[in-house]
Picture 1: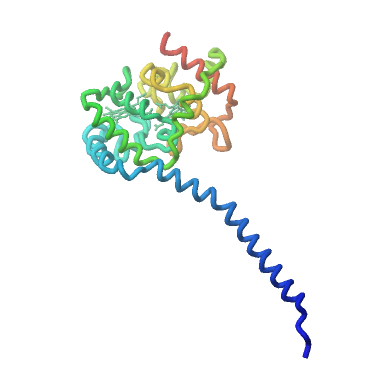
Picture 2 (picture 1 turned 180 degrees about the horizontal axis):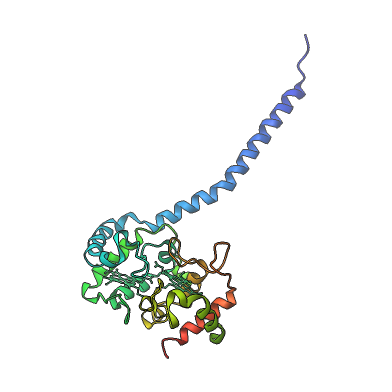
Length: 238
Ligand code: HEC
Ligand code: HEC
């Protein structure tokens, strides 16, 4: 009978160990991603807000649904989507609350100050309950102000933005599908970072497709985008 070679056992053990190490490595690569997405889901949909969300839904259906539609998906050329993922991720609570409270002068968005603070908070909670992306509004609002050249921005604006947003950003009243981004109702509440991210990434499932990356309507550099923001900042004072 052949005597078993102890080295065969040793070899087997080494193979086994190597397999374990490999497995461990694979797990450790996958883990941070897993735990990160868990954290995000928790932060976006805190359970404690469920009551506020249901109250907000009722207020939404009484006051907003006619224009912004069921589930706030919006209607092109009539009212924007309020449950759009990119929109919710860059819009701060301040932006949402003050836009609802003050409306947008010279557009179809009426002011809702009469609803009061608690109802407006309910509306914001209801809108936020549709969010799947993390809320990055604090980082976006802290971005630096544009240092762009408004004269160059005006050329871009007239060439590629005016067809949807109207000349000087007048919005739907000019017959396009884009909102009144040249009016004070929007510019008075939106930070340069908010505008920058929106131009860059667009808003999925709307006609605002974004101006960087492979799905872009046209490729604009970071500098071009800042030139456009500088132009927009000069518009409402005209
Ligand atoms: C093909 C049409 C189209 C073009 C071209 C377009 N947009 Fe838009 N844009 C939209 C629509 C539509 C929305 C609102 C999305 C919705 O209806 O839900 C929007 C939203 C925006 C918003 C957010 C406004 C708000 O009310 O919160 C900004 C900022 C913006 N666009 C900037 C630009 C700029 C700058 C350009 C040119 C570089 C541009 N857009 C080109 C259609 C367009
Ligand atoms: C009579 C129609 C109408 C009603 C009712 C209405 N809205 Fe609007 N809303 C609009 C229009 C039009 C705009 C875009 C204005 C523009 O061109 O800038 C808008 C814009 C907004 C915006 C800014 C969205 C963005 O993309 O920046 C928010 C937030 C908003 N509405 C919330 C509400 C809420 C909440 C209610 C209910 C309390 C409501 N609106 C009721 C017509 C309406």
